[in-house]
Structures are given as C-alpha cells and as structure tokens.
Amino acid sequence: MEYLRVPSGYIYLDPVRIKDLDDVADILTKVLGLGKTRVIKGIMRKLIEAKLSKTSVTIPQLYIELRTNKKTIYYHINRLRRLGLVSRNKGEYFLGESPEQPIREFLERLYLTKINEMFQNVDELFLIASNRF
Image 1 (tube, rainbow, N blue to C red):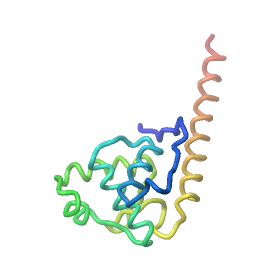
Image 2: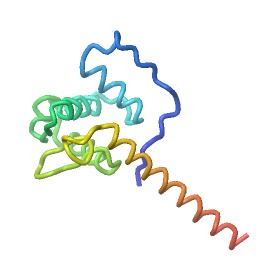
Image 3: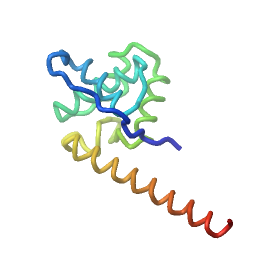
Image 4: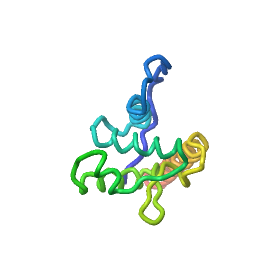
C-alpha cells in the first residue's frame, strides 16, 4: 500500500523563479513527495497544464510528449492513481476528481482523508496493544 507523504518542510515559492510549467511541476512533485524522475515531472507537467485548461490527458499524449516507453508511463500514472492524486474517465486522466475541481479543494480533502485513515490505524494499533500487553 502506498501513502502520500506529508510535506515535512516549507518550500519557499519565489514567483521570479517560476518561469514555466516545468518549474511548477518540479515544485509540486517536491511538495507531494513524488520523486525526482524526469518522467514523473513530465507527467505532472502535462496534468498541471490540463488542470489549468480544465481538460485531461491521455496515455498517447504523454507518450508523444515524454518520448519514453508506455510501460513506464502506465506505471507512474497508476502509481498516481493509487495515491489518489489522479482520476481516470474513459481513458483520460486528470488531477483530482474532475478536470474542473479546484486543486486546493481536492488536495485538502485527499490529505484529510489520508490523515483520518492514519489516525484510525493508530487507534486500532493501540487497541490491539492494550488487549495483548
């Protein structure tokens, strides 16, 4: 089971340094703890671009843009889906639950859900421990 990482540090956003969507994707992948690979940043860039235009992306679009094999693209897209960051509708992918959903609203709800699940697991763990020890 994969979990979203909770950002541990503040990332200073300097508007002067954000020149293009690549910079935005780089920062967002850091904030979400998704890793540093070229492919994940490329996928996130396309998803951010789609979010800003309230559209979606397809695997063929990602394949053409990223020039990497489809297995790698599918692997990362499915990883983002398991984390709850990306949704799919008829072969089209987007950040959030819909292309129109504001990203902040989506991330707040996602993280609150994940945090509540974590606290539930902690409660269950301590209940088991209190019954055994």
